[in-house]
Amino acid sequence: MRGEEKQIVVKIFAIMLYDIINTGDQDLAFGDSTFFHLEPVIKNRDKPVQLTSGKYKLSVLPVAHPATTRFYPKGIFSESPFANPGSAIQQWLKAIPGEKVIKILLSHSGYDQDVEYSRELPQIHLILGGHSQTVIDTVNLINGVAVQQAGGNGAYVGEMVGELTDGDFHIDSYHLDPMDKSIPAHPQVNEWLQEYHKIYPGK
Image 1 (tube, rainbow, N blue to C red):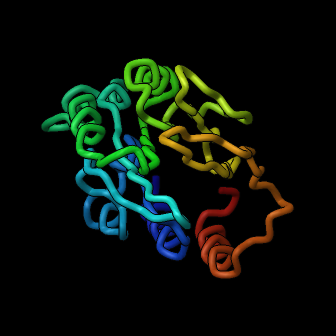
Image 2 (image 1 turned 180 degrees about the horizontal axis):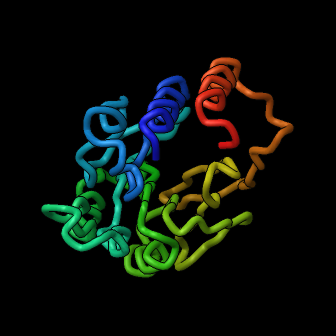
């Protein structure tokens, strides 16, 4: 990825209305001086974030599995950029008080690993996954845990509505919205992209 492309991506994130961003293997290309300084990007993964949505409290744990870097050239990292998240997940679940908190695992681990998490840890309510770019366009319950993923390359935005009742998380609706040409371009982003295409025609 060119330096100009990195700058555009970082600037786009800076104007988005997000509560939390997880980081994955491809984000390592940005380095600490750019991507990881966005707020509230979680630089130190495996630490939970507490959010409030209406009357509900949410505990969100962002994790990335070390297997996601297995295709990188050997020796590219002085040490593994992602620790094994298993112990962090266990500690997170033990620390959540009571049953009135929606437990969300924000996982950059791939769909197969997320399925393993759901089978081993049914106390998690929702796993929002990435890395494998799996398109899941319906409610996908595994061992009582909703394991969802919205594809890759920004093709879709997932929207879920749910509620927590007596410790049980129930999904009222879930769907993927395609990010196609029917979505109007953000004026500022469009300007950045036009400037980029002047420098790199055909990209």
